[in-house]
Image (tube, rainbow, N blue to C red; front, side, top):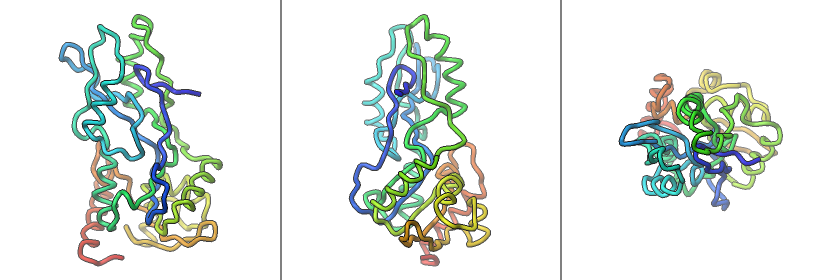
Length: 260
């Protein structure tokens, strides 16, 4: 089934493009989207409307790419225009990944294999409210497409998807597995490995934040490193200050050579 964003862009899956062997495998939750500000007569109708799939997994929000993608979206005359959303609304998690996770560990993006439990974008509650209040009332009078991108689920990873992720993990040939937040631990790692924890909080109580441990998956040993989600690390919107501070201290300890 083809899912559509506001103004008709189709949803597509985002997966690792460079599938040569990597040093580190990063598992997130679900893909984000390209966000546009919708204006009419210089008045903002919606500050950040999800209008397209990102051009690649963990996209960094490159302004020129955002402009090119958004300029290609057709919007009926009379409904105004779209422009790239403001700073911090496109690609914030990717920037945190690059600067606060990969860089402190000594890796570049080119050395990482990136994956999400759900490789497609979904609508969070704020997006759903914006669509219901600003977009849906205009559908019939302007011949707009109904928005069919599903809402954010509670389950991102079923048994079939777990198998597919494990296949990617093996193909990556990485020796380090980084998990971003509670959900990849609970919905992937807990299902495929014998581990004594079900959340990041559990892991920290057992081993400490940012302390890698050893694990075996499909007979292959890995160094596993659960970390906070980029939203928490980068204080992006609603977040826990606790995780932000713990991650900051972890980065500082790596800079001092206290952890390996």
